[in-house]
Image (cartoon, rainbow, N blue to C red; front, top):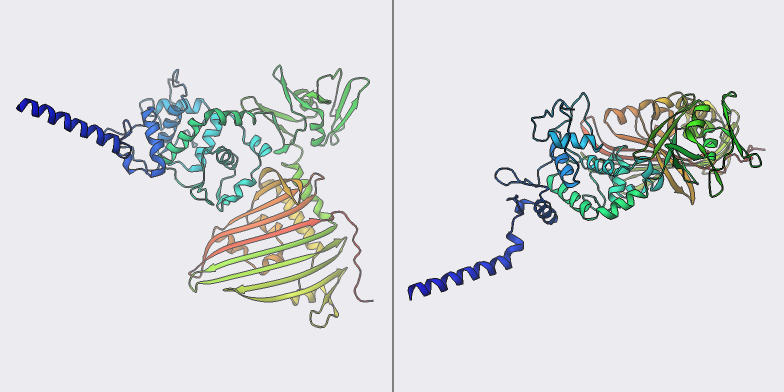
Length: 564
């Protein structure tokens, strides 16, 4: 009887345990090799469990994965190599990096990742094995794995979508294309609806989620990447838009002949003879005539890039892994389209509109201060018109400081009295003493000349094509230093805003965006300054934007004296 009861008791206990495990299993089961799954965020549990069950991640000797801990470069490349099944055999006998000797546990993973081109060192022969990894660095490593160039993403997709993140200005220029690809393919998302946290330290659970998403959508991601592997061409860092795709034939890149017209060369076709002549306009002895040119796509003649590049005195760098062709001409500036657009402003004719918005939060008095300034007018030779308005607001209470019209003809400044409607005449010095805003053509020319003088020092990024008022334009980003800001921002515009020393001594982030249309005209420029500053012991948050729009460029606009 006792034995029978014991048997029934054992069966009952076993049944209870099985039933309990079935009911509670989803909440209590641990991932294989990971004992601290319960310490992970809810959104990451499924990914960690899947990664552990597939032997991609594991815990330490006690089984702890430490999901919320920041991940080091060594830990990250180990996960990447395992997850992406990268070959770790036939490693070099001598270590590539001095801080990752052959005896180090991560040696084979670091060497494999480096060989595959996923990542490289941090400089001075070191890998930076213990350095923490940022979120934007991860996107770059995944893009490297897919062998897609950043230029291809900029050329095909553009970067405007990143503006939905309020911290897009904090993204490193080199990381923006890879962030764009990661977000577009749902590999990564923001830490909130409007924030990406590009320089935030990535945690182990975040990496688990990223790799989980990547691996479970690998086929579609690789298909999307494949569409970006068409040949991309740059000329002195300017992206050249190819209406007809290039082809690679017998290790030579065949480019549409029109590509070289965008480098400033003259391209002549002789359809009867079947020849193409490409001639440099800056060096008369640089030219090439190609006979029996029959390779075509949709009627566009293709020419061998190497032969033409050498004949014109250029150089080229071809990366067949990512299908990127870089053509360089050492005799002209980088980003020549941008340079020429800025140069064209020396003799600007047309209409313009400048708008400046400053918002500041001063913490000691909890005061919100805002200011807007708009200047709208026209320029023709040494004559100009402007309508200026300045408004300031303090904690929501608004006041107009200035609202008047000026006409500048030669050395005379005509100002319309807003109270009487009559016109008053000033000399330049009198206008400056009175603080009257007017368009000083000579000062603007000198500012443009200063910009051209320091152009070679500019940190320029070609951000590809974007739409501006329905027109496709090229967008450039320029990181500004003190010298550049002085050259690019009107002294009058800054007189009522921040001092330049305040901007740089407090480390405020300063950038400029320039938009150039298909005719090579500068149609818009924006200066953005934001961040926190401390002055005289008082902290304030600053956000300043200056937008300048240019329209009816080249138009002869009649500007006459208002006084007969």
